[in-house]
Length: 268
Picture 1 (cartoon, rainbow, N blue to C red):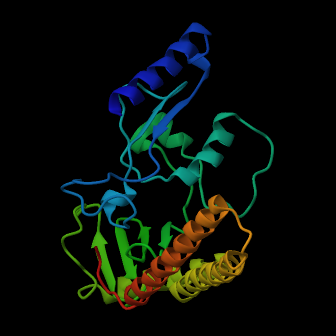
Picture 2: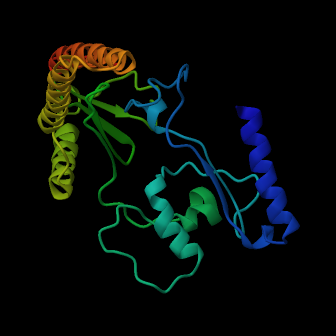
């Protein structure tokens, strides 16, 4: 996989070079999520709100970006749109409600770059029914994590403690209060879903699928009553009858697991 990716990226860069576009093109390399397995010293991984699930590589090459430079300022992929807008020197107005900011200054000057104010911080709201539901909120050096089932909160200084091993929530209650208020204000502003809504939507979906299968079973049984039905069709209907029955069993098991997940307070 790594070799294929490396080869493919090389082909793109070679094509830019052959077309004489490398001096007038920005290339952004990143990932859509964190690592999938062992990410030590970071905790967690893909589909988790711990640092190993949120931190991804980001490499940029292009006009004005110094070679072999590094920047430690935290950014997010929703910064890409305003950044591309700035790099293109576009005069077209951007929407006023974007979460992202232009990171053009950081690309050109690294840590010396001055970025626009990021009022909302970084909000990672993940009310998922299929994994641990956590909302993570980073503002400055601090990251607040809230379990969406239990309401339990953890607080870390990820600038000093990237492994998230020292929970500061009990020793910094004012910081917890401040960040919780800002997080809730943002979630309310954007109409973010609650876990109650997520679980109910999933349960309703499963119930709908079960009812569809029940109706199919009734129809299959009625069709099997016909005396003049061909053997091939009879076998097909029996097969579909078994399939629908098994699917109902599977969906009910998923519902049982969903009920257990609603009560879970695990963090991993």
